[in-house]
Image (cartoon, rainbow, N blue to C red):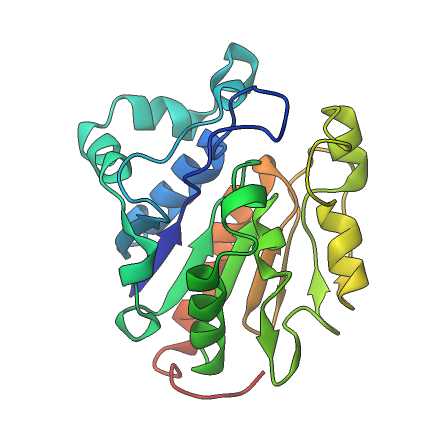
Length: 235
């Protein structure tokens, strides 16, 4: 089993001048879910190398067991520091793709042609696509059979109420919840900051940082159940 994790390379929070990037928990927790399940992992980002970490994600109040483990794991840190270039990734080399969130993807992955074509290739070849928190935004220009990939699918992602709580409603290019609904997704959410992940067919989405473990576990479960079904074109 081989999974591609795609990180952001973007580190500026809109026009605020503040730093952003990927949310550390959303990288670390799925990384260990996959590693502990014996998954072979490849990490990529638009620019390659070290993806920027949102400094807020590493504040004392946001620490988690996975983050503590990561900070004591030199091999994991090396993996994160040496991501490959997204443009060089091919769906045929993997069983699934997983996108961690953070606000960074809202700027460099949502309209990225390499990301869009890669997701479409995974999905067209019957392979699962997973994204958590802000990362479901990367689906907003992805299509399947001529329609938005999320149309008619049960989906979740960072809620409007969560964006309001972090006071970034007017900073992000668009609101994840609103965009998923606009595209015809059947959006669902749990109360703010609670773990919530949805699997609908081959599409897996998680609501927020707390959902990153559940989203990764759902992907492992789906892949385990589907093996060796990869190669079908069912929706």
